[in-house]
Image (cartoon, rainbow, N blue to C red; front, side, top):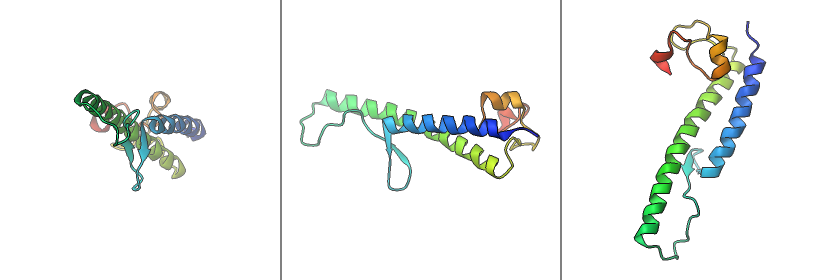
Length: 121
């Protein structure tokens, strides 16, 4: 039986870092979802030329893409933490076998064993 406390600590540390990163590029809306916030938003009263507006749109797209990746990673971490609480952590979601510890060392939120890696992750 593996010691899940080691993985729990790693997951909680990564979650903290992710939340800080998410807070730097987005904000939580009323539904609890993350939305990207353009860097250095101008007030609606300020006159913007087309180049400024295009730059802001491009910045928003980049931030939104990064935010989506971080949000997915956060969901994976939260899922792994729930599995630790439910004593189901470390079981492959495809075949049910135990996920190899060296795989969990690299990615503590892994959902599959090495054999099933291409089937789910």
